[in-house]
Amino acid sequence: QVQLVESGGGLVQAGDSLRLSCAASGRTFSIYTVGWFRQAPGKEREFVAAISGSTGTTYTADSVEGRFKISRDNAKNTVYLQMNSLKPEDTADYSCAAGERVMNPLNRYTYDYWGQGTQVTVSS
View 1 (cartoon, helix red, strand yellow):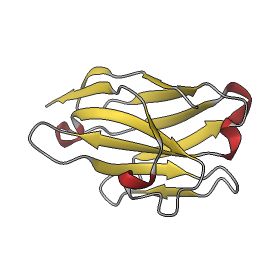
View 2 (cartoon, rainbow, N blue to C red):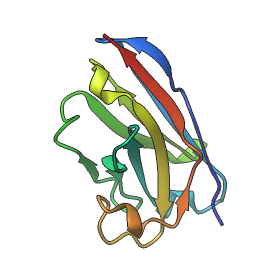
View 3 (cartoon, rainbow, N blue to C red):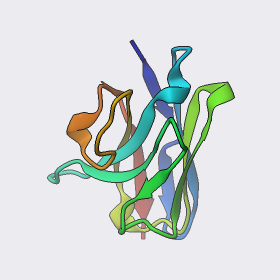
C-alpha cells in the first residue's frame, strides 16, 4: 500500500513558477512509476508528466513541454513537478499517482494509487 500526499499548490500570476511535491509512504517507492495529472473544472483529467521507477525515464505532455519538469528524490520518497512560465490555462487540480506495473505512463487508468490533489490557480 502506498499513500500519496501532494503539496505546493497555490494562487500565482501568469509567468510565475511553482513546485509541486508528491510525498509517498512505503519503502519500495523507488520502483514505482509516478505520474502527475490535472483536472480543470468541466474537463477530463489529463496527463501532465510521469517518471518511471526503474530507469527514471520521463514523459511530458506536449502542452507543458519546455515549461514543466518532473523529477524524483527516492531518498526522500518524493516526486516533484517544477512548473515554470505558468499560464491561466494551467489552472487545475493537480494529483499525483503511483503504480508498480504501469504499462502506459500517460494513461491514468494504469495507476494504482492516487493522492488527494493540490489546487493550482494562475491569474492573468
